[in-house]
Image (tube, rainbow, N blue to C red; front, side):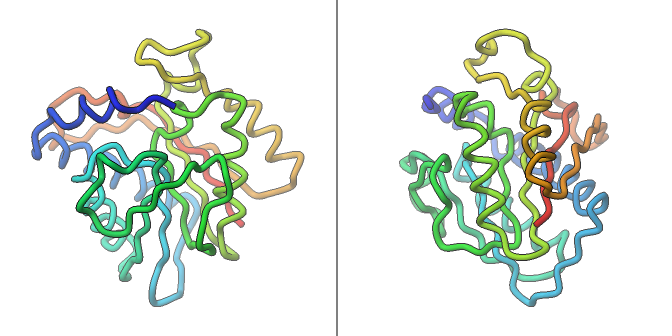
Length: 206
């Protein structure tokens, strides 16, 4: 998993653009929680973020989860490299193809993460994200449309293909509850083209 060029590209983006991209994430999460009728009752919500491209996103993640859930959030961010996240709170160096530390969590959240995992290891991440949940928790894997429709061995940006049909079949075989949500988001307050406006999320409920 080579993420450094991806990190470097994000560092060049303005705070305003990062905020607009966070707004897209917030709208995606709003749709997910609504579709799953997700209303946790605990007073403190534990969220594990699996991978984070830019340190400025850490505070945005906490803000959006707290806003949408109406509760305080204990946020832990896991990434295979953490140099790019130095100075932020709750950062843990971890390869998510291995079991996620310090469970259980109410939510495990990977935003366009799977494409950065070699295809044959993606199932390990999906399985680990589910196994780290507490009862009624959600494992969320957001993807861009190109990630799940490409027929190339590698995407133009270096990402791996995500064979969503294959992973859904494995989930069906295990008998867990999941939904494959699709969307095309048009937000007037986001005037720049963002690749992730068309995509969806594989959401697994424990």
